[in-house]
Length: 368
Figure 1: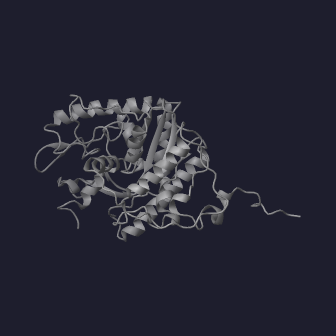
Figure 2: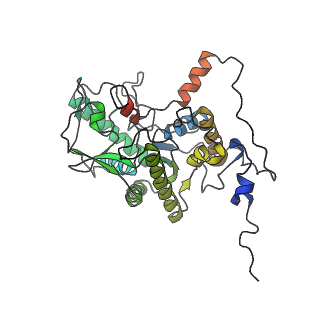
C-alpha cells in the first residue's frame, strides 16, 4: 500500500499552514541557512541598490561590515565612500561582478578608460556616479582607480562572508571589448558613436555562467569565504526592451531567482536569503512597497532585516516556531500619532536611504 509522501512534512511546506490567513509580518519564509554570521566575521556586501541595506544594518547591529576603501585624506567622505566595502557603486548584473574581479586582478583591461563629461571632468565608466562632477583630470581618475582596485582585492581576499544581491539582467556593454557598465554614457550626456555601446539582456545561461566564473575566482583568492546570495525586490526603473516595464521586471527577476536556485542546488554551502519573497510575496499584499510600487518602505526593510538577524546572525534569538493556528490577518498599523523629532526622522532616513545609479535614467533632462 502506497503512502502519501507529503504526510509528516513540517508546516512550512504547506501553503495553508505557512501562508494562508497570515499577516505580512507573520510569514517567515526562511527555514535553514547553511551558516550564520558572527560578530568577528568580516562581511562584504555588493550588488544592486537594495544591497546597501544589509551593510548599514549589520554595522548598526554591531557586526563587522568590511570597509577596505576610505577617503585618502581622512576628511568628510565624498559620495561613494562607505556605501559598499570599496568604492565600486552599484553592481547590477553578474557580468559586472565578474568583470570587477577580472579588472582588480589584471585579467581584464578595458579600452574605455574614461568618459569626458560635457561640463568638464572625467568619470570612470565602471563607476560613473561615485564622485559628483567627476575627476578633475585623467591622472586623478587613474590614481583613484589604482587605489580602488587595490581596495577591491583586499575586500575579496579579506572577507569571511560575501553577500551579493542580484538586481538586473539588462545592461550595456562596449562593442569593442564587452566591458559592462552600470549606465549608458548617454544617460550622463557623454557623446559616443552610436554603435560604441550595445544593449544586452542576459538570459539564464549567461547570468549563471558569469556568476559561476566570479565564484571560482573568488574561491581561488579566498578559499575560506562563505557566500550568501539574495535577489533585489526593487523593480526596474526603466527597460530598453520594446515591451512594458512590468513584463521586463518579472522576466528579469525570474531569471535571477532561477540562477540563484540552480547555484544553491549545485552547492548547498551557498546560502540564499529570500529578501525578494519577503517583499513581493502575496502575503505582503503590496504593503511593503511605497506609493510608486517600486521602492521598498522602511517597514519592508525592517521586516527583511528582522528575519535576516533572526536566522543569519550568530547571537540573534533562535527562530520562533510557527503557531499551530495562523493568526488573523491584521490591518496595516496606523500612522504613529506621537511626534517624531527631526533628528530621529533624519537618522532613520539616513539608515534607509540608498544610492542608485539607475535613477539617473529618469533624472531631470532624461526620459519622462
